[in-house]
View 1 (spheres, helix red, strand yellow):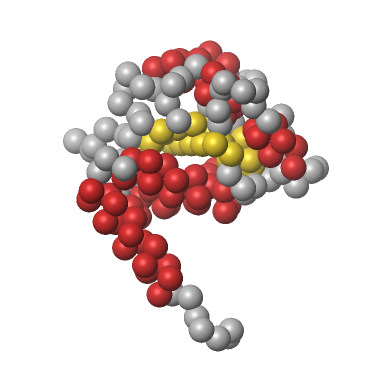
View 2 (tube, rainbow, N blue to C red):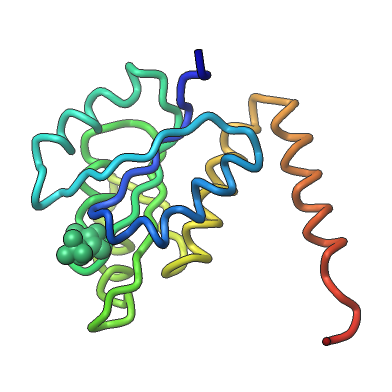
Amino acid sequence: MADAPLIGIIMGSTSDWETMRHAADILTELGVPHETKVVSAHRTPQRLYDYATGAADRGLKVIIAGAGGAAHLPGMAAAMTHLPVLGVPVESKTMKGLDSLYSIVQMPGGIPVGTLAIGKAGAKNAALLGAAILATSDEALTEKLIAWRTAQTDSVAEEPA
Ligand code: RP5
């Protein structure tokens, strides 16, 4: 049986997958058990309620939530769980994701959402940050994270082209 997921990646629409798959890819590389679900704050509010209120009891430790436009998903998830929620603003067609960023980042004091950059970089960093949170109590994962970062450093060319 596969390991139970420790990180839940949720997104408002299947159209967000192109962005959020970068978070899943990083977690796969690091060997962090995770799950991916489409959970819309607007179109499937009951699914969001069930997911967020049940997340901790299912053993999840971190939630990564990506959404675009009127991006209420990360904030609403954070309102219904004590788990850390990392928000990824998905790039929207009309406003290039600025709408998503502002929707996610301006949480009222008391309900935090750790907000990442717009788009692919944000998805990637949400996964690295989620893994880093888990790594504070997991030495093997700490070693994997350090190795990942060392490999990244080693891959940077000294000269262009
Ligand atoms: C948001 O609306 C989703 O997170 C997505 O980024 C955006 C557009 O959704 P679709 O119309 O592509 O399903 O809820």
